[in-house]
Length: 226
Image 1 (cartoon, rainbow, N blue to C red):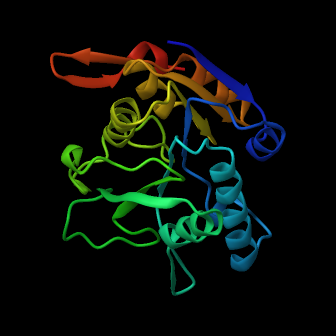
Image 2 (cartoon, rainbow, N blue to C red):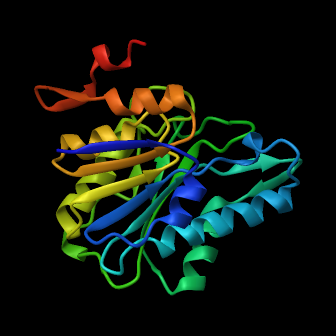
């Protein structure tokens, strides 16, 4: 399977790229902590605008999947799932499913961020097959290569859905970080394109692979030791 990682600003890359056939998008967009100088309203506007851009670059028969963790900001709760749905509604993309992945065990109080993340899947024309439904609550997000990375179990669930229920042969992952989603896509025989501004993370994203031990996938230690 092919993998290409562009060392570039994801917004500029998306703005200059046409809709590519046989693709689906997976995105985990940065929160306000990565935007010094932005007010909460500034960041919300950036988030919705960026989500809309990603949705607009997804072909009608593909899917756009957002992996997002809410934040608690100055005594308020910022619901990123709502922001994603706001962007999708503006373009006529329907929500196919909304899953929750636990970041901490149930019953544990957390601060700053909730104990779960959203995974939302949208499409313009594709509809999910009810008979192929999978659990709506994922109890463990799985191994991560870095603090802000997507959990491996979540990545594999997303890749399986794209593989089994879409005609997409390629996953595009803006803000790809160290490449967990790209590695999961390749492991399930999908091509992958990542966009990452950080040179260090982009290089890791090019090299990260998965290995399978009996029934379970894991990150290849040789590709993560850098």
